[in-house]
Length: 255
Image (tube, rainbow, N blue to C red; front, side):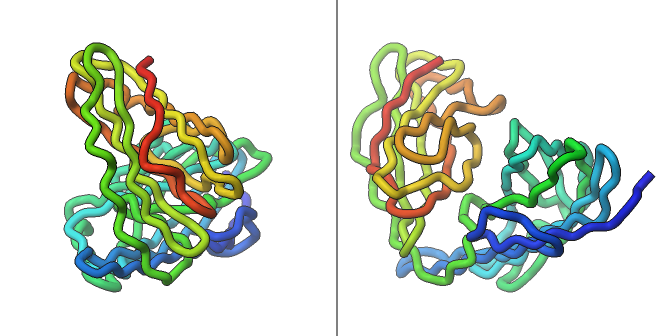
């Protein structure tokens, strides 16, 4: 039986959750690039032993979108098991919510709302600390990003193996990294990419991969749906961080 109602509040630039509403926002504008940005309102509408109901409203602050995927990660073992107004899936701690047929088009300042049921551990149910919309981080910042640098034109390895390159969007105090993993001549069935972060930098959110840590040397490992990569083909993952982003190359090792 549902025994109470609780709402949580968190600005995406802080790590701790308190009662009422989660708000995160990012507005970016770069010359010769489409503007991208988002605002997310996340709330726990009701909670009971072993379960809770969450509501999410995502607002597009950038150029119009014809489809969207919102991603976030949980830190206390929460598991989404049902959703409405979006198609939700979860791999490890990472949740992906994709539009359904009637709410995929978001004009500038347009919003879509969806809800979900999930389980929790009856001890702690912290709100997510960050969100991404179509791989654009919602950080609460309104400073423009810089265009991502072109990764070095290195060919994928011959024979078994993989190669990784990184494109960075950097702004004052933070960055997002888009990582491309390319298989060599042979198919790979899993991969781990090792990234060395500069001093003072930290990972605050990851999508399409699992991270081994948040600072220093971090290993990113494939999730269930993107470990298998055919020869000479690629897959992508990304992460959001604070401080200065890493370089444009990283070590890749197949499973």
